[in-house]
Length: 356
Image 1 (cartoon, one colour):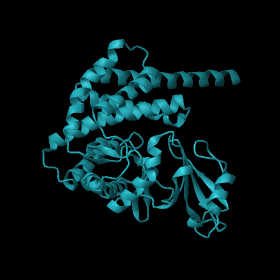
Image 2: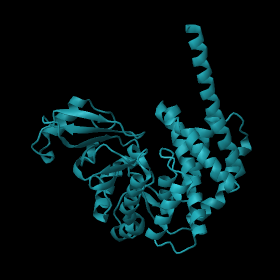
Image 3: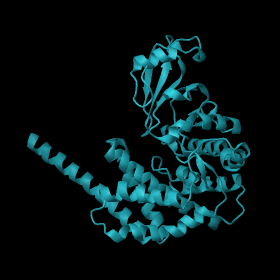
């Protein structure tokens, strides 16, 4: 059996599962590959001879430290009352775990559903995550035992902005000056301080539609290995400004109204909106950095179409908040992506004429 650090063949994985007494007597006859985002992990549905799922096999590398936290965080979330896949069996030494199968439908799959149905799902999602935001930090402090990533601080907020600059701006903006990065950070430091002043809670960190499974029993959350302390506004912004879903302003406002009541927000609506917009600016920068890295560095081109979507959303927020350098950069990103699409269309038309 291969040790953790290199991915195994499907034959090796089946052999491991079927030889483990803790996984049960039912044998798996094949693996069904499950594509899941950009993480350094692989997921397979374990299928028996009656085509029934026996669970999900997760193979992970310790290359990313947060991957080693998944099982412990999963148990913590379940005990807290936050729906997450149960851990059927886990061998940390070799980077293999069998998880409860939460199905194949995520929130993104409902993107085109009628708003009445989609809104109902969003509200269920917010209710389901609320114990994490409300009580997670206090529970962690009382236990003093949960392994998780370092919390949001000034250093991490700056790292996310640098990630945006290095992986997205530098790839898609033709005219950048040495002063541009400094201007961006200067504009955003006030926003950073506002986020740091908020009450500390636990946050999922990647709370977006592909990481929210929708089943008959309600929503369940995955890809939570990046759990850390921060402000729950970051998670809320991740959900409501998710580039995969592109919620309209009116729909977003309806969900904001529910969130303010659910979290017993003590301030004014204007204060809530300012903090949420601030968190959205930060989150969209992180997302754009991720899309640039995954799409260009790792060659996962399925992430690239979401760059102009996220950049447009960030441009609107930056313009409204007077973040002139961020607005300039995001406008250039959108223009760059549109120009490339136009060039591809022109090439297709020229090729079609030559073929006639």
